Length: 432
Image (cartoon, rainbow, N blue to C red; front, side, top):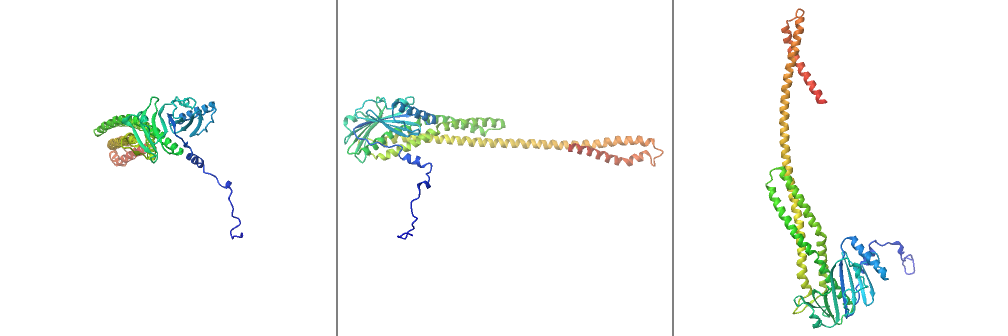
């Protein structure tokens, strides 16, 4: 015991006595995977989003191309599993980000930069992949967006609202300029560089995710027409099932149902990922819109309301189409089960008729066999008695009785012997 009465063996355990879970490092890294740079107005931010694809080999190819480009340009090569990396080139601060199926390239430049696609920041690396969206955000140090800047927007689709607890104003019309960029104008007033960076980041993500959420809409429209045609075919086949009278007709309809099931399954598989991704992007978009906390102006709509009026119906269309696809597959499965049951009942009925026919045939054969056995017994006995008659005729004087009496006495025994002989032969054949 020590002087203070506590055990003297209290101390610190060695760190080597413990080990980390294999997911601890990745989970910790995820928190810091997409850092937000502080931004100071005035400046211009641009982002281009390349739709690389969800297949692993496509993203791996893009990753390899980017790493090779960094090595050629003398830029620090990112790690193999990079999610985000940044570098500076001349007047540009560049950030690359890798997502599940798309890659974003964002760069920040002076407010008067006119170059829409500058060289030396890596745009050429992904030029073989399609651009799904592009955004330009101009950030100025003002309390409100200038009237001259507002003149560049389409009045019919202009969204204008205050954000950032009233310290900033955002304006956009979601139209693309001559270079293919959606233009945003942000006026910040007494907003810190950290909050400005967060604000810019959110609007870049809003433009990205509102586009990605709508990627599934064309597929929904195409599949809606396909599902409609399949539903009509199923209705026709269900009508024919009620009038089926033969197994051949049932099998023909069953084959058509199986073909219909394959096509319905293909329709569902073709859009399963796209619809799920659209819903996920829509959820992220809604979170980003909620966090900008817009204050609506008297004359113009907000970005949240404008996008909700367009994105929400599109996502509802995707959900409705997916619901129809799943419902169609379930209906086809039930029709197949119903027809299978009908075919099984018909087959069982036929089997009963066949068994009944076989049973009748067996009874007839048994009766015929019994008749034949009886006739055979009589015939054999007749011939046996005839032979004995000849034998008795040669010994007539030595016999105690007449030949006729002898044959009469022996006749029952000959009949029994013949019958038992036939039964023995029949039993031997059965055993074989």
